[in-house]
Image (cartoon, rainbow, N blue to C red; front, side):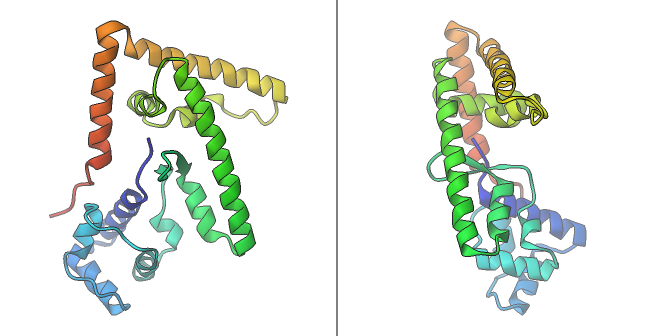
Length: 215
């Protein structure tokens, strides 16, 4: 499971405010000066995920902070998509920075194809442990703090110098090692049931709990 884009924006707005020593009401006032009808509690609503922020508002925030839009989308997160797959936050930034419409369409199509392929692969991997793909992702975040495929790429390291066959062999070894870790964590019988229920409950809390707002 990934991160909501709103959470990324909320995190970066709070971080930039803190660095500048700006209060939430002060930031709302700054946004009013550039044309946004923000009330004093608008920033608190964004930072606690009680209200979404539009792309135009992101542009306004970049202006009052004096940073690029990319800075407001900073991070190494994977972003949840409506279909249930995730995309790297870097791809979101890249799409926004693409200059030409044709290039943007091409980039989005390529990204969608890449993630569809990854999702299919993940389903096959999960099936090997008799798991739902969402359970496998929740377990990955519990064990390593990142998605299964991200952890695999991290452990793979640089494989650009390997042949296609060697790279596939190495990827297979790493995949099996990760699955062994997941299997050992789950255990068997009632322990497996309890662990899955625990991980599902923790993941639900993680997804619905907003970041802590400043008083």
